[in-house]
Length: 271
Ligand SMILES: Nc1ncnc2c1ncn2[C@@H]1O[C@H](COP(=O)(O)OP(=O)(O)O)[C@@H](O)[C@H]1O
Ligand SMILES: Cc1ncc(COP(=O)(O)O)c(C=O)c1O
Ligand SMILES: [Mg+2]
Image: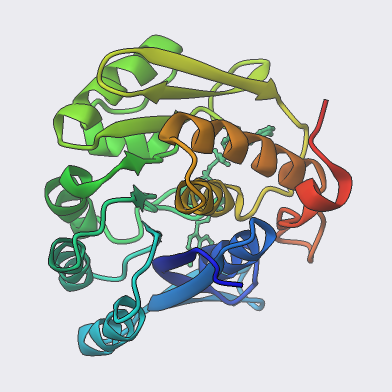
């Protein structure tokens, strides 16, 4: 049986919960055929508090991967961690060359537990080159503040202000993930399509085992788009998918707990 095909242009999380690992696991759960172009490799140092190191892949090698994948027609794509400005430029060029029209930009800037922007020079390139090509972009609260240049966002009104600014940068739709970071009793995401704001609310799960939540959310949106859902339907279904994954997050070691990518299919959605 022919399957819908999806591409992730993203980094490898050697610990297995986020990055391309999260994307491919999520694609599998949602019944699409996942392919990946690796942009960078992230390792964690067990002798130094699990601190992260990021190793970008040579841009020529990224292009060869993309040429492999794009030689077949894909149905939707996402981006995650992008190792360098050159890779962002390449991604933008390939989106145009292959007329890719279901494009999910997850503007990964930080890993949870780390508060520095990993590659600050990438933020401008994402604003200028990727947001104008985005069907949807999925920043968390911190990333939304950086993209919109509003500074730290603390309220739903602040999320609305940032969503308008990110939409003006060219993203067709925006979902800002209040998630764990917004000080609110629920896990609230704000969806904006240039006309209306929609608040997506979910019970906030009390856990720190949430590594990979953002990647899995964006990957689920990508799979849902590939399967023919509208953007709104794709986001709503992705939120249910990731809430179950967080509810069943588990402890990998003393530093990190990944979400359970397959929880929605195995145990169903949360109440
Ligand atoms: N504790 C939580 N309970 C329920 N949903 C959550 C929780 N934390 C995050 N989410 C949801 O998971 C998705 C990913 O959000 P988040 O973890 O904030 O992203 P990122 O991993 O990119 O920082 C969003 O839909 C968010 O609302
Ligand atoms: C390769 C890679 N991509 C993306 C992320 C971001 O993950 P999250 O889904 O938790 O936002 C990480 C975090 O460790 C990572 O290592
Ligand atoms: Mg993220």
